Amino acid sequence: IETQTTRVEELRREVQQLITSTTEQVALLELIDSLERLSAAYHFESEIRRPLDAISMSTRGFEDLYSSSLRFRILRQHGYNVSA
Image (cartoon, rainbow, N blue to C red; front, side, top):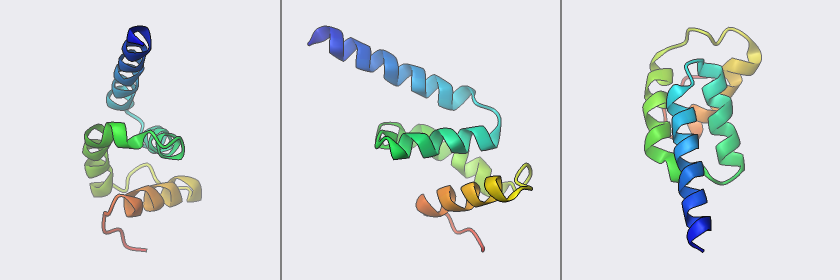
C-alpha cells in the first residue's frame, strides 16, 4: 500500500508540473479537458484555477473554431462569465 501511495503522489506531482509548465493556452485547455474527462480534475483545482484566470482575460490565440469553442466550454464549466 505504501508503494501505491508514493506512486500516486509522484503522479500527482507530475501532473501539477505539467499544468504549470504548459505555456500554450490551447494545450493547457486540452489538458484540463482531459483531466475533467478522467474525473481527476478535483485533485488539481487550485492549479487549474490560476491559468483559467489568465485565459479568461485573453482572447489571443483563439482564432479558430476548435480553440474558441474549447475556451468557451471550459471557462463556462468553471463558472466564468464568457459572452457568447
